[in-house]
Image (cartoon, rainbow, N blue to C red; front, side, top):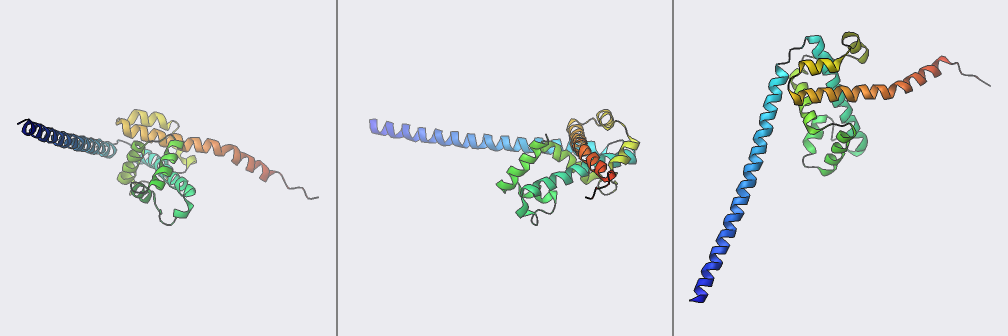
Amino acid sequence: MKDSVDHKLQALEAHFKELDFIKDNLTQKFEDHSKTLANQGAQDELWTAVLSLKFTSMELNILYSYVIEVLVHLHTCVLEKLPDLVRSLPTLASILRRKVTNKRIRVVWESVLEEYGLQEADITALCIFFVAHGNKAEHYIAKVRQMYIRDINFMISNMVKNQALQDGLLKAVQVIEKGKAEMAPQEKKSTVKELIPSVKS
């Protein structure tokens, strides 16, 4: 009798463990599904925000110029760290696609983002902006951008209401402007050298 009771208790215990496992598994799947839905919802909001921007074509071109320069720069930085993969990573899209399954690419990509103070959410926002407006926008060089708009940060903060999109655009401007500031002394130095005639002994 005791053996029979023990056997039933063991069976019940095994059954409860199985139920616990199923419950944990379902909970994990539900959490993953919720995250997926949340990400989809956030991307839908981003698309809506990008497509409803009230900028003039000139303002849109200036924003596009910052976005494309950042995306190209990030692509270049990754290739510099992975010279053996230059041919297999011809575009930024190829990096974004392959980093999911390739740890080496993912580690380099994450280090590049960290170096420039960027998050994956910023890249998502910038890529959506690029896809939405890339077919009709034009690239303006820095001097042209400065002629039209003195304070791009104020324009973005004032006109872009979606926080994720605003953050992404502001960081894009920051990366490019910081890069220009770091390059300026080198450019000035080279210009001075060009002005001084070489002295032949």
